[in-house]
Length: 475
Figure (tube, rainbow, N blue to C red):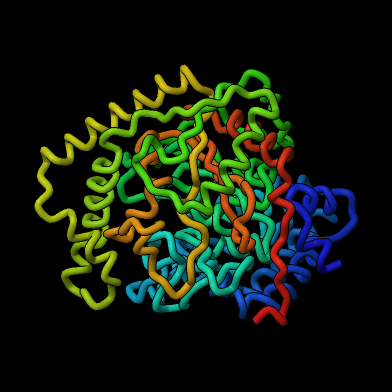
């Protein structure tokens, strides 16, 4: 029963409880057993609240037994990203600065997931301050890829992606500025959705008007991502970007009929990125799936002129606002890449920031016009396959030097300024069995349509059903 419960989809686990086939307590016990056996190999869950989880599962079962209505996520175990505040449970951001930080309240995304009935189990690993797409930090070390324990899981929602792939939990929360939902989903053969800014409100964000960083869902299937998105979406008065129109449904996702769908395929984002040959090989086999389902596919890319400068300028300014003073006081508590990124804001003027915001506006208008001509854009979700976990980041891609820890993440971060939803869906494996994800992008505020297209690709390919060969003997 342990294997059947940990491998089940989130939706099937909720339905099984409704039918009385198993309890929240049994679901939790199965997942804790798997965490105990395999987390020492993967290091995805870094803080565990076994007692609190047991109490929450028991309460979920009492509620169901009393005939109360069940939430969308009733009884589902989840460890939250260690950058999302959890009341009474340590939240470290992977940084020595917050090693002993115990919040007194939940972040809004945590609150909504728990309100929908989920059972809090613990916290999942992140890069230091969630900066960079490689999940390691000085507090907990590195998270290892369930498909190859010597490889990275990406990041920054890498602990959550690994926990999904290793079947420690059926759903995961995450956040994404430069690819932190999409990149680890690609590297762990799961699904990660970066929603339209404001779809998932963040009333606790220090800079409420910034459209760069968003919170969002991950799961092993598109339908589970949709279920979680329905639970965490909706307006909040504390988030000036939040909105309600086009609210996603909690119903099971029906794969779209792709007949006549206008698809743009941008393997190198208009020659703006370099992509590892083995990744392109996988994607070039996957993209014809759309044509096979009736779509019209052609090479095209949205206008990304200026996107690199916009992203780097606004990211550096945000980093400086958040941590510039702390860096000056405690420079030894920041890894070199973060310190470099914060210092990139030095010398920025108000004119520089206004120019970046003006370019941001132009890019978002260009994206709107592009999606008048095309229904979706396809692109790599990561420029490389999972690389050795001992490397902080890949310094070359097929011989092309990557000068900073940001360069190799451009497949995702160049699309961030467009303000549109983007999803990474399993697209296949390299000859060495390493996962590769396909990024599917569409018009702002149309997540429901995007999910249906992604579900059609998922159903036609079946890559999401390939589980890692992970056992206690793997180490």
